[in-house]
Image (cartoon, rainbow, N blue to C red):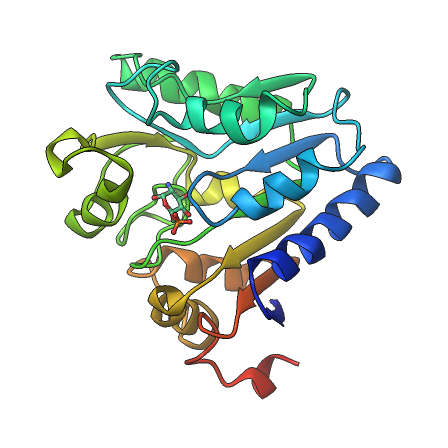
Length: 240
Ligand code: GLP
């Protein structure tokens, strides 16, 4: 993993943006894997402020809550439209369908989309418990798209986006860890002290399914962009 410690999320966004721009203009970004959460918003703002053209790029999005539709204000579909797709048109945008009740059918449909569109660059955030996408602690490193139950800590962390904690969906569809690992390049962003523990375990402890992001140690092209708070438990010299 290649580590960059930045001043703040603006500097992180600029760094990520430059990597993305270079890949795009050299024809190496045809499929863009995207993430939700507050972390990538500064990157999406940087992209929408640019004149980069994504009309030949397909996006594949990590996850979606189950039980809410694309027009629900807390859905990840809505989030991506608001922060990126509504301002920067793509060739096509794929997200899991949170209203599909047949999980096996929806997971197979999404796996097929990922198989047909190999991801060039995957953007990731990280949960406080080390989750990526919605692959919670204990998720198999061999998982493809799955219906997952959100952990209590994720429900609490994500409840800040909802009027009340009771409204946070308890399940989601998520790309699996194995699917994420197929991306040619992965850029993971983390900001703030609340992520310090997860970043430390991801980078400095042996890979374990108890910390889903630690699977990334087995990928040979991962770029980690963190601020000083998120890097505060790391021995930064080990990663230079
Ligand atoms: C959600 C998403 C993840 C995201 C995480 C962290 O659970 N499924 O993809 O990385 O939240 O969110 P934030 O960036 O707001 O801390």
